[in-house]
Length: 204
Image 1 (tube, one colour):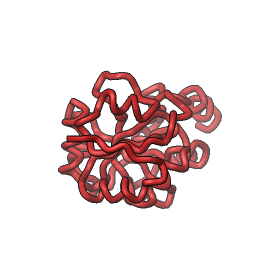
Image 2 (cartoon, rainbow, N blue to C red):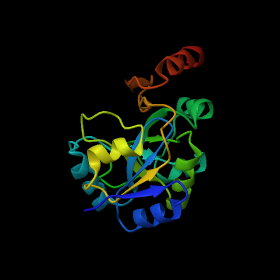
Image 3 (cartoon, one colour):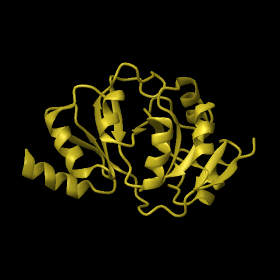
């Protein structure tokens, strides 16, 4: 397989590839992500294989707008809504009760991890496709990629395309916060963990 390198002006082609059950990497506000349609379970399996990712690890979902959240999550807790209002778009991933339509291959549990990236290019692509199941565009345990070339270095020949949007502005993965418990719990420190903890201290 030859991995296509697409420019940031070729989002229509990237969206077409995703609709054709292909794996496409693209930049976010943190690092490059590797995505497939959120409701395309069989292609999600290919994503695990491309990354050598353990199958028990759920794949987060990226959405473009808060209005899309109910496609992938249900019963949003009040504290989660406050966090959304404060930190989205941004580097905060929230673990929420899962919409039953989200495939088992994307999340084998009754929860789903969701965020809105703070990068226009990423949200523009997601608006063309709908919610995307997206994880870091690297081999499992490999370095987090901030450029298209870094993605190719690890996944070239394993995925169909990479959208080259230049270097990502962040470089540190998002903070992951479990909002399905009475008191939210940080599952991954990530980019803005201190800001999230301070917000929770002031809010709870």
